Amino acid sequence: MRNFNAHSASCREVSKIRRTRIIAGAIAMALCAWAPVKSTHGADSAGSILTIFYADSLSSYVATLAKTYEHEHPGAQVRTESSGSLDAIRKITDLHLPCDIVITADWRLLETPRPGIEPWAAVFAGNSIGILYTARSKFASRINAGNWWRILERPGVRYGHSNPERDPAGYWTLVVWRLAAHYYNDPAMAERLAAGCPRVNVRPHNVDLIALLQSGDLDYYFGYASDARLGQLEFLKLPAEINLGDISLAQQYAHARVTVGNGANHKTVSGAPVAYAATTTTASANRAAAIDFLRLMLGAAGRKAAADAGLVVYPEGLAWDPSSRMPPVLRAITKPLGKD
Image (cartoon, rainbow, N blue to C red):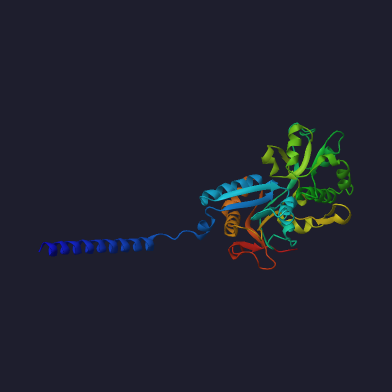
């Protein structure tokens, strides 16, 4: 009798355990059905290391977006490296350094097929070229949009720009001089400005000139409007017809052409609006994360970061995608970039 009772008690205990497991399983299934689905972008990006090579005039913009991205993707890391746009490209094409995203200060640099770089570009913001200076610059209280070239031509005034063979800001400056010669009806202006800017005043990258202003080694330099925020500098805004900041004036800017480099390495550069663009690399180890970062750039957060950095904000991103290789998720939030 005792054995029977013991067996019955054992069976009841087993049944109780089974019922408990069945109930627990049902609860788990219900919870799974109720729980919201997590973003696949966040899941793909979590824990990833994203490497970005970018034009150095975008330092504050990229830093802001990198911080936002890491906040939205816990565990992800964004590693950034600034340089001139052409150097950023060479790090991928010539040095084969690992990278996921490359950003240039002239979207046209991504038009040319390059090994290691995908054949499409997302154009997300612009900039303009003007004259940067400090309160200590010679004739700082007198310079304006109607006399700036006369101020620069005065004896003892030192001005500079970046190297047009390494940095788009350099050839943008030469284009501005050409446009200014026409705008102010002074045909020899560009040649005079070039003659008054010795090689020692030409530095590899645009941001290299900030320290020269702050130290007093230069009085003025031609650079981006956004540079003023990097070094707390004064900025003289030039007329829209010459400053390369108005995308609606693309045809007018294109009338100015300059030659960059010498001998077999020379090339002709046409004027255009200053427009930043980004794409991914073919060897990206974190393609999903890279696309997710570009989605951030092209959205509201990217537009706010552009405004805060002093860039020209576009109402929507533009897509250069001649071979339909841009990821569909990016193509869906951009407008095709028309070529004039």
